[in-house]
Every structure is written in C-alpha cells, then in structure tokens.
Image (cartoon, rainbow, N blue to C red; front, top):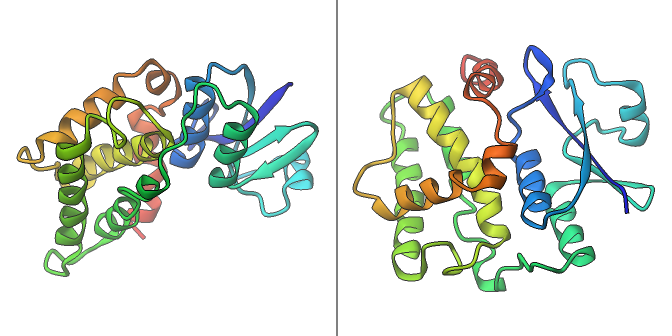
Length: 212
C-alpha cells in the first residue's frame, strides 16, 4: 500500500521539513514501524490548491491510505496501528494520557509575558508528574518498550526544550533526572534524528506566536 503524508514545510524554507510536532509524531510512527512513505511538504503560508481540495480545513498532518485522505494525528496514528499491528506501539489504556497536559502548559508558559502568573509552576508540576511516573515505570512510559505515548511526547518535549531555551533562557530543572534521561534516549533514536525539524526552523515557526 502506498502511503503519502503531508507535513508542514519550514517557515521560510518550503523544501525543508518544518516544525509541526503532530506531523513528527506521525512520521515517528511510520519510521518505528519501518514503513515506506512519500512526504509532501506543505507551505502553510501558501497552501497548494490540490491540498485544499482534498483537505478543505487545510491542516497537517494529512495521510493517504487506500486512496483516502485522513487528517488528525490521533486518528492517523490509530489507523497506522490498526493496519500495521507489528511492531505494536499500543500503550495500555491507563497510560494513554501520561504527560498529555505538558504541551498545553508549555505553550501557555512560552507565550506568557508575566513571570508571576503561575504558568511556569503549572508546567513544572506536569514535568514533575512525568518524572515521578518514569521513576516508577521507566525508562519509557510503559517500561522498556516504546509506545505511541512516547512518540507523541517526544516532539513536544523537543519543542519545549528548544523554544524555552531560546525565548525564555529556561531549561528543565536538573533535579528531574528521569525526564532528562527520557528525552535523551528519545532524541537519540534513529527515527527521531530522521524526522526532527532543525532548531532554527522551530524558532522561526514559534516566533510569531511568542511575539504576538
């Protein structure tokens, strides 16, 4: 089956993979399952007509299976798992939402202009909770075996690390050793190296939102 995927092109560099964590999550899933796919880079500032025809809401990632285009990274990852069950990336249901609040809390903190509004603490609380979970169940969310939860968290933690360091000179506290080890091992995976956006494109992608 020919798999085609539409991903965000880099801001200012339409031929380079951009900084969408949801696109990277899907790419990571395809890579971890050793599937062959074709990537279309979509310039979100100037979306091609064919893309809007098959996908009127204009969002990425978008994937094509059996001549049908499907959007939404949650739906896409579920479908990949269903169609290509080996190797399984399904987490136990009770672990499916581990770390799920980190990304929204990170975005709020990143955009915050007030150091005392509690957004930093809210993010820290979520990171501490992940650290605690990894301490008891690690090295990955479900122990030794990587699952879809890790592949969803990895790009988000990468965005957090790169953008908070750049825009806020902020880093994850050293005391959260399990989170540090977790990100190191995720970022070192071949699938991650192959699908990550370059840091400068990530910063360019976030700048308008941060400076808004």
